[in-house]
Length: 356
Image (cartoon, rainbow, N blue to C red; front, side):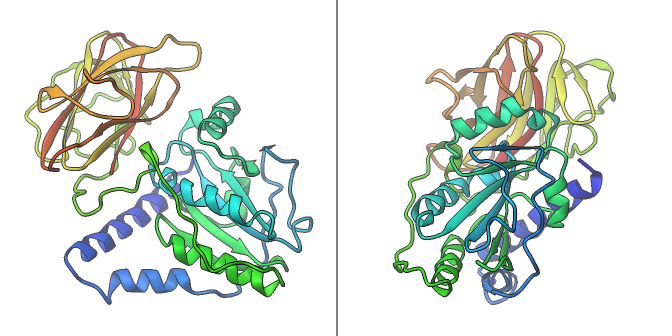
């Protein structure tokens, strides 16, 4: 993925974070309101671009704008490790189910962020594991992404029955607004819809972030985009690290690691990653390369056993397929804490922390 795409995604998420910060401080009628109003505005944004850049299709034969005429079309850009997209999935899934018979076609354009997300076996696994039953345009070469001139995960584009894009929304939220646009466009085409909005019951990684307490940002572990690493990284060279004293939102390594451009790779057993965080949830994109043996790990928060979807009551788990692992979901008051994950065997690759 090009640096420009990375930059745009991170800049947008930063702007969204600033808006959320304004909301926490009570600054309404400014940034937050403007973003919401812009997202709810329907307008003619041109024709539905070609989908021919897809390298493969799942759950469907290849779809084309011409073949979709007469349908309201929602194109949802995703990549399966992106927690921001994962938190929108319950709503996209519910919309696809509710309005399919009234003429809505939902297409998930899977455009990878990390190299392992280009692996079609991983995409097939993710679609099955995450119950994505609607058509998927596998966009491993960014052909669909470029056709839409898109820069964000998640991103939603909605086209009317005449193949004109009438609405877009970037990022999480605005689910009622998105559904009302679908209802309106279906009604314009003569379809009858009720005014009820879908209700969802998200679980695990699909649960919305607790933005009222979230103080820790997304953090990459590869040197190309790493921020707040508490040690000096040697690029692409094995090195023994120790975790220094960490300030809020700093992280460190212990043990023998090789810090590469997009990931940190553990060379020996008993390596550790520590992060001083302030959030309800701690997630880590990690795993082992295809064909490698799973790696056992244990998670501690402030020295005690943690609670998370991927670990048992003692804080133990196993890293296998490269994906997003939910390692901490705080049960008590959210405050500054220190997270530690220790790996019993070598071979794990760690890519990125996300929080919720």
